[in-house]
Every structure is written in structure tokens, then in C-alpha cells.
Length: 276
Image (cartoon, rainbow, N blue to C red):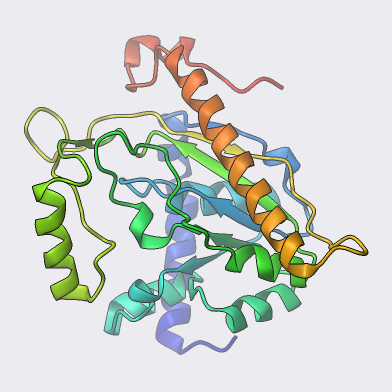
């Protein structure tokens, strides 16, 4: 896909930054497992969960590129994809595409690794008690395209990002109605209501949290004979959601016994590590 010179320059800069931040990422010792399961040919669709802090948007592409040497192409919410000027250039430089069918088909025709968050932007804001829950609400477009191209799906669960900020308000209350009305007025979307949050103490300074990332076993999507496409698409969507939810639950259990979870420097050497 041809890109303007300014976007190509920005892309090279981003790749240089990605290489340069490797020591910083490793210094925080994120818990990462399942990289060995990634298909080395790059022909797979990563399906992940969004968190309030957005760590997944950086860590998943970072580790995929280190593992297989290929840049994963993230799909962005249509709302973000319409951003003008430098913001649009930055998304293009990062390889992001608006999550609509034809660009995804083009990537799949070229066997590119792709990253999608089926919950979209509405999965980012988490009200009290919604941490690490998926808000897919029946979205199945990713599964439909994966089935069309027999593209393997790799679940990627991330825990940690929903605890950097603590939500103070519950869904269904006055604050959600106010926030939803503001969102509707500014963006035309009523499903992007955001909770009141705090970080360290009463501030918005991010709380230090270790990140836990798991790449699950690839889910095969080739349609069996004598199975209708609609039935199989729903089956694949359900399998992906169940696998992701199971991995999130496992990571929460793993994190519960990790003395380094709050990046406690005194527990650095006792940090939980993936089993090999």
C-alpha cells in the first residue's frame, strides 16, 4: 500500500523508537507467554481485549514483531480512523487501518499479521466492576473475515491495564448519563460514556502495575463441510471470546500470587515468570 513520504518517514521513526524502548520494556519485566505459538509465517489474526490504560496497543505489536520479525497491522475504530492531519498520519505510520472489510481482505490476501479489538473504543472506558470484561455485544465481523480466508485467530489477553486507574463510578448512575450525553454531543456516540477515575491517591498519575500478556493457541477457522457459514462464523466468534475470557481469568489468578505486580523493586527477583 503506497504511503506519502511523510508517513514513510514517520514509520521509520516509530520503528526506531520501538527498537530503542526494548530495554525500558524489559526493565519492567512484563509477564509474557505463548509467543512460541505464533505462526511464523505471519498469517494470523490477533484478537485482544482493550483496557483503560491502552497498554495492549503497544505491547502486543511490540512482542509480535520481536517474535516473528513482522509488523502486526492494527485495526482502529472508525471514529479514530477519521482523525485529521498529523493524528491520521501517525496511525498510518503505525500500520493502523480502519476496521472495515475491504482493507482487512487486502491484508489477508497478502498474509499479513493483523490485530483487532472487537470491542472497539467502547471497551476502553471501564466502570466499577467492569475490569477485564469484554464488550463485544455480538460483533462478529472479525470472525466472518477469518472464516472467509481460513485465517487462524490468536487470542491475546492482557491484564494490568484496567488497574492503572481505579474507576469511582458505576454504570447506570447519574455520572454515566452525564458522560454519555457529553459523548453524544461531541462525537455522535452514546456508547463512549467514561467513568470518573483516579490513579495514585486522588490524582491522575498512573498507578504502577505489571502487565500480564498471554498469546493463546491459534484457533483454526477453515469451515467444515456440511456446516452453514452463518453457524460456523458464530461458532468461531464464540470460541475466540471464550478463549480470551479464560486466558484473562488465568492471568488474574497468576497475578494474585505475584509479589512484583505493583512493580515492587524489592520483589523483582521473585516476580512470577511464565513456565516453559
